[in-house]
Length: 139
Image (cartoon, rainbow, N blue to C red; front, side):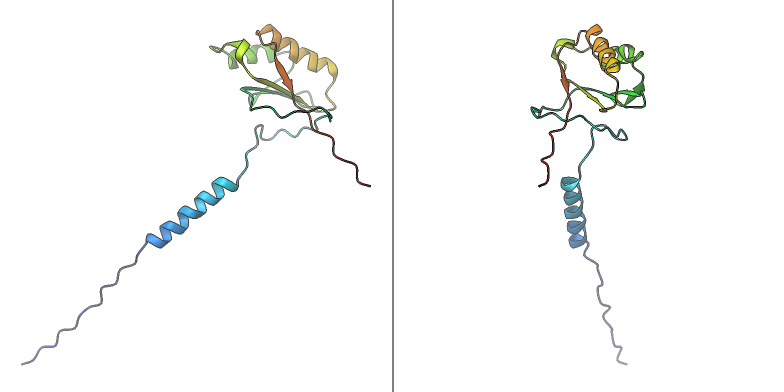
């Protein structure tokens, strides 16, 4: 009696190329994505012809035309800004903090002064004002 043996094919899926492709896609999206520093706040910044690029600030203060003030993503108003700044800068040296103040071009000057006063009450004197460079006019 002759018994035929059939060899079963060894089927194995190699996942190495798939893992390589997924890893390449992850790297691509990490490099090509950009992040906003203040998500959800749409400001129309005033223009300045002498604007200079600064490094990322440790404390950001943003004022909207609606009267809202955001301090490192914490919503407050101009009157409560001093308390929020104090809590955000607790345990840090105020003289060495890098602070940027951005405000919509329609924000009243009084609100800007109140925010600068709140920063000064917390020992912060050096504040960078965020502006846009003017766009060249089309001929």
